[in-house]
Length: 68
Image (tube, rainbow, N blue to C red; front, top):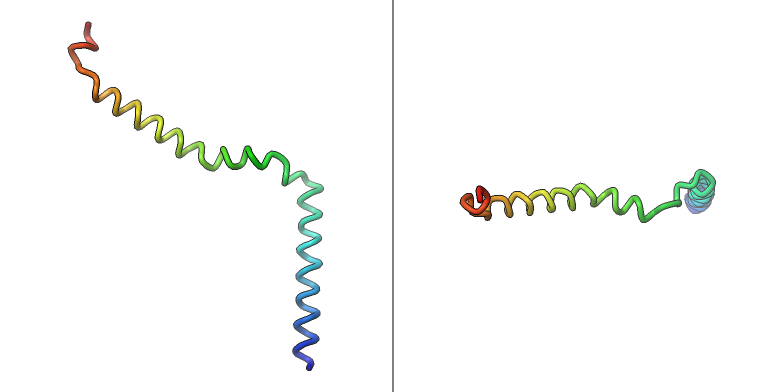
């Protein structure tokens, strides 16, 4: 029976801790501009894709046409 009370107490402490971390994050504006974070994460992948397409287009061009 002691283990049950210890488990209940530990779970309550973790729950209170999670609520406190959430309140701290809200007060510090960590949940503002969530969309910007998404674009920052994937921007490097998009930039690499665009650069690779430009390189492919440059290779596909005929050198005779480029000199005209």
